[in-house]
Length: 76
Image (tube, rainbow, N blue to C red; front, side, top):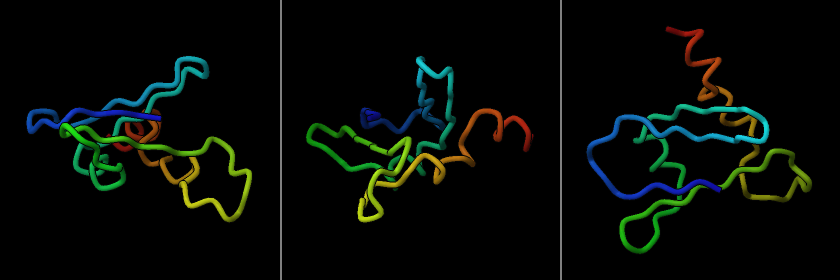
């Protein structure tokens, strides 16, 4: 679960899973497109680490591979 407040200042959103030492660096425009808008100008993004059901409508982590820090750094 990832949250972001509404703002026009930031270019990227950093998503961090401390327990796995995994980092995703997502352009804020992409984050807003994928996330659900909430009251107060906030955004909420869910994804699954492992897909438990093929019927789930929530994207799994593989859909965010292009945003992994290692991938972003490799493309620079």
